[in-house]
Amino acid sequence: MKQRRVLLLGLDGATWRILDPMIQQGHLPHLAALREGGAHGELRSTIPPVTAAAWTSFQTGLLPGNHGVLDFRQHDATTYETYAVSSRDVPSPTLWELASAAGKRVALLNVPLTYPPRAINGAMVTGMLTPDLKAEMTYPSALRDMLLQRVPDYRILVSQSVFNLQGWSRFVEMSEQTVRARARAFRFLLEEEVPDWDLAMLHFQETDTLQHAAYPWLDPSHPEFSPQHYEKALSVYRAIDQEIGALVERYGDADTLVIALSDHGHGAVSRTANVNAALAEAGLLELARSGQKGSLTALARAAMTALLRLDRWNLNRRLLPRGRRRRLVEQVQNSVGIAWDRTKAYMIHGWVYAYVNVNLQGREPNGVVPPAEYETVRQQAADALRALRDPETGKPVVSEVLFREQAFPGIASEEAPDLVAAPNPGYEFTASLLQSSKARVRRNLWRRDHTGTHSMDGILLAHGAAVRQAQVTDAALVDLFPTVLAWLGLPIPAYSQGQVLQTLFEQPLEVAIDDAATLEQFSRNRAYSPEDEAIIDERLSSLGYM
Ligand SMILES: [Zn+2]
Image (cartoon, rainbow, N blue to C red; front, side):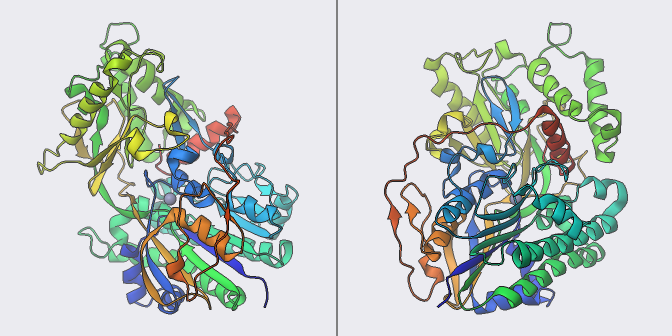
């Protein structure tokens, strides 16, 4: 028998809510066939269900409380600022590194959180958060020029600003081109760079980008569903389906396990809850008043609001140099907008989930809450979020509040926010101070291009000679790490938090545990130069992530 191998296919943010109707209409015959002949079900995301946290859990077998990657930008309570994450924030060996160390050959294309590339036994092209095509985006580094020669139209991703400025048709068209170019690049990797691969992964970002931009147009059950826009967008989903079909046709032999998965699901969003306004109303946060040192005058506030509104047309990209916009926003929110000496709890960033910190003495630079009052303040902040209601419906915005030790137990717990809040469907959060406290929950006004948000239920689909035909329940993203290792016959680090998904297979996989593998000594260090940070910021904001 040949050595077992595994082909992983990432569909960022893919959800059965959107794929099911497409499969039923016959638009995705290859995914339909894989599902028919294999195991499939929902795949539970991480807390929070966001791309950076989730794909890091997938690659490390650790939950966010241990790997510490909570979002694209992380809040640093000791400075009130945020910084962009990268592969260097991933503290423990990845699936790719463990397989490499065991002599397996690895080929990766576009997997999030792999930039800057870390050495593997094989080849990789880094994914989302790669600054641009000029960056050190491949391992080995000589691969970059060859890749761009062979696939001159290769793109890391399509910015949502294309949708804003050039419309849906152009956005969809470019997304489809990107899918095709990426699949060509992947075939080049597998055929010529790592023909003896044991572990390969191709990642598509386009499902997530399209769904963020216009979820209602893509979900036939949504009241604002648009058949014309849907028809156009189908070309992207069909392209992904065809490319997956071609890969399975070419590589899906009896020894190959094929797994398609997403990092989180997706749903419609139309209302934004202003967390800092809610905290202000509960007496836990104060805005700096005009005329005081460190305050924002009414005029400056109006100017800032106008500037941010321009973001709808992405004009401030032209008005402001790279990176300045974020600094400006952060300035408003951090040093100017909030009166730190009178604020007990605050949110610096957070969108899919809300991240709230207590302004704690000894941790925050201008902390005012003594450690003895930490629990009381945290409870008050949790109560304020639970009490947050949508004035239009009277219904609560927050579905659940979790304290740090519940949401993020582990070695990275200290860096996590003091509490997180999960929204009810249809809501997201903002830390903006630019809306009045009366409008705590409002329609997404200046983000009309942003009508989809993340949910906990991603997708899982496994196919291969060893795979059972089954509906899978209770599978989690973090389970893929031990499952893939076991499939490849490699030991699973004892610290791994997932379970081997034995339910996928006809015969249970043999499982070996590496008891010597412990979590101690894992460290992170930041990777971006200021120039890189500016480019990343621009990318994230153009994707609607900031
Ligand atoms: Zn994602």
